[in-house]
Length: 357
Ligand SMILES: Cc1cc2nc3c(=O)[nH]c(=O)nc-3n(C[C@H](O)[C@H](O)[C@H](O)COP(=O)(O)O)c2cc1C
Image 1 (cartoon, protein in one colour):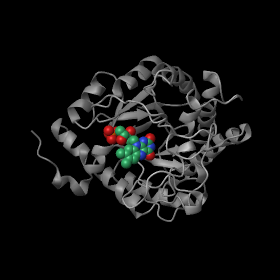
Image 2 (cartoon, helix red, strand yellow):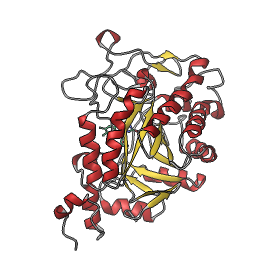
Image 3 (spheres, helix red, strand yellow):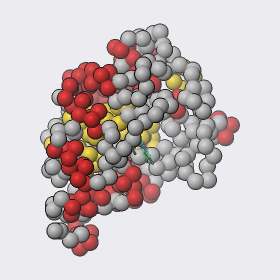
Image 4 (cartoon, protein in one colour):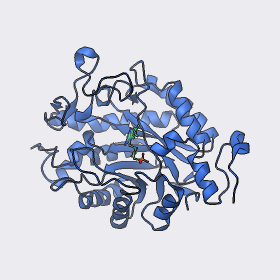
């Protein structure tokens, strides 16, 4: 199944081995624009056979960056760099998505690269003031400024503007980042959202911001292009956002035009995470069962046999291969060889294909 095409809204994704969003922190100029690094990084993995590549967390506003090295789509001058990558990826027969993100209270950290300090990049050192649902901090990070109701209500339009720019760049998929303790997840969780306005309190209120984001993105994102949402399906702590909450949320997101839920977990609070190969796939299965939406499974799915098994057992419709795809741009070729499928490598690489059994 891994090499069976998946068609969403008439767009054919040629296989089900996808690259999940992974921050590169390579925007040295701090202007959110893709660099040669991004072209090489995404190009290599498209040539390596990934059917869909979801570009890393891309900020919808300057204060929605995790680091000043993040990509952004908050202004028109950023579009051309994305278009260049889309052209290359399309020439490799792959599709290109982008994860639209707001970092919330986890914004303005140093880049997670050698030579940089850890923790907060202070305003005085070129960082910025992060915002959050309240002014309470993620452990070890600085205090965000709590958003006013008006400021929260203005955010969905920022996501929609960024989606329009992604469309102008020729991208095929938008994924809204509502996972890993960033802003939209912070609003969903009762552990980080203690607001008393229309964005806090009940499940409906806590999920309002995400629903508004989805609605406003769907208004401008072309009807024939897929829309994904990434969630942390559980926070792995009692009293936190749960898989039941996620499934209930997915039931509401479907009619708003979300096609696929990318099911991750954790990241909003410090918690023991039982990570192991494929450990998040049962969460994807539950979301898929309850909502009827497509799901993508992610998390230590490093072996082709495990990926195939997750698809065959109906837990998910696609597999995201993250860190293994960093160390091995041609992971899909190895998987195809192991499963006896034709090579997904770009034509110029075909003579480098592995032998088939
Ligand atoms: C270097 C790196 C950067 C990441 N950046 C993002 C990101 O921008 N957005 C996101 O949702 N997840 C991000 N993640 C999480 C991955 O998308 C993925 O969910 C995670 O690595 C688990 O999959 P894996 O075990 O196949 O690596 C990142 C992970 C890594 C290793």
